Amino acid sequence: MAEHAIRPPIRLVIHPDEPIRSLEAAAKVVRRHADDRLDRKTEEVLRPIKGATTLEETGAAGKAFHLRSRIAAIALTWLRA
Image (cartoon, rainbow, N blue to C red):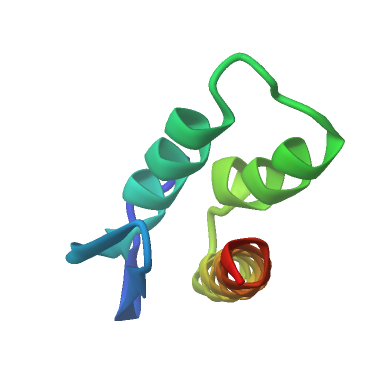
């Protein structure tokens, strides 16, 4: 996995004081919250992060992570309501 920064950093609801600044940090958050349940959706998020080697791939992986995190935040908001 290439070490690339995510710009701008992504702020997650679950970690508002710890912005995600790199693909490595994004992968760590995904793994931490998936526990031992690496299902198809989790693998779909991790695959582009692990395989990013170019600037274009890094950008796409960061955007995909951001989109998935926004979808998850919306789902959590709905569950709490």
